[in-house]
Length: 247
Image (cartoon, rainbow, N blue to C red; front, side, top):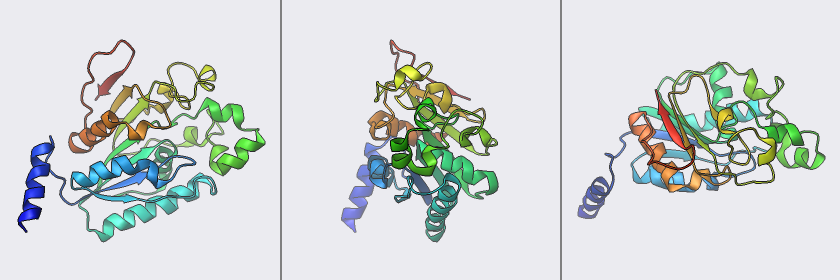
């Protein structure tokens, strides 16, 4: 008993935030990844007292609408079983589109806040360029075929969604061979501008690449900030265009 009390006191002292109480977070990884790609975020959330659901889904095997319904339903069911008072959603890449697709036809009564990392909210030029490539089609499956920037891309067919949304976009390429075909600053897969949504509450541009943005300690700290307070913390001055925007 004393050991548990000591651990609780240690967490409270070492963290700038009070422990979360009865709040659940559903984590959604990106295309071609597994839930392990979100392990650093999960561990930090657990340390802060959140309940966390993080499981792999068949991102390369099934259509996006099916993935959205199946995956979000499982995550929300877990949070309901835990009798969570609030449910937050945190995603990477394709996971952000799953959230948007799910919320087209569903509502979450106890929805808290939503954080999207590197979401292709207006599609990706990489998908445009590789759509007809048989190797890409085999590797990325049905989801990879609908991630383009055109009117036939799923990202541009979705209506605005309700909720407090914070978006973090990277401007440091992790795939330099793709950057020349992406306009403006990008993370190697998605442009900074493509990550934006009109209905977002806050936006943050950081020095990170698409592949490992979810493992960036500063990014994880900003996720915690938004889940707690609904804002991103100002970044220190930087020679590049990194910046934040809270509304």
